[in-house]
Image (cartoon, rainbow, N blue to C red; front, side, top):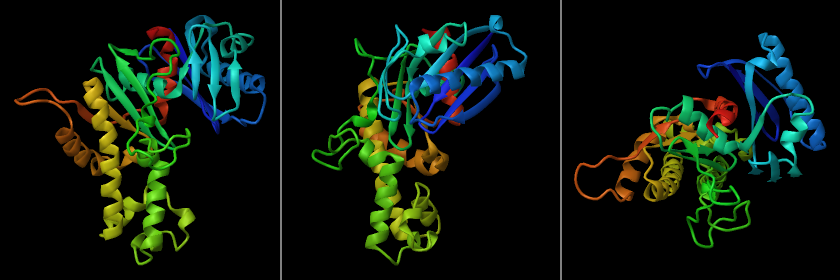
Length: 319
């Protein structure tokens, strides 16, 4: 039996076909062109899936289900995407539209939840029942896995918006409209903003030379690159960023005490540069009590950009 997963993004639609060993045997992508009507985008999702199945020589009768991971809020029971601000979708009947083209069961869930499920089933948390996956990107995505299932909350299914824990009262303005959210301090976007501010304040910094004086070229890697060259300003930016990151991680551990916290997104590529100090700070900031008690592990994600595809493909099997 095979499984099909779709990761709907604001820029690209990525899809993959998984075998029974949870290995992606075929994958591809097409542009989302998110200004179009939802029916056109969903048609492209279906056509991409159909093409991948044909290229792999797989018939629909051999496929268990199709899963879709989408940004936003999902009505899982009825297969409706209620709202997303990345793509202007409201009350979109994803399941019904997909089944106009493909005669298979269709499941939907939030994309961060799908990434967490992917890491839980086939990635960095595959051997533990409880984990939280934190994705550091434009914002902070999060998925909570309890007893091997996505935790969605009680009625509206919106649990897991971990990026909007308040870190600083009346702090930085977040895209959600509130101030002081963790996302406004520890996302890749926040790190870029912090690096730019430091470069403006310290024109002598290596940060400026790395981007040729063009601060618009600063990305989430720039401060780390400057730090590796011995730049004191870069070191301070990185140290402060890791402190911000650790505060949110510590809160998650204190609330859920998961077996493992998985760190994903582009910043996670820094590996031990982030993970080692993050583990040290989090251990001091969490309530484990006295004695030799088990501690939550903090690890790097393993599936990369495929996590969303794998998790989406498994929605039909895990619900």
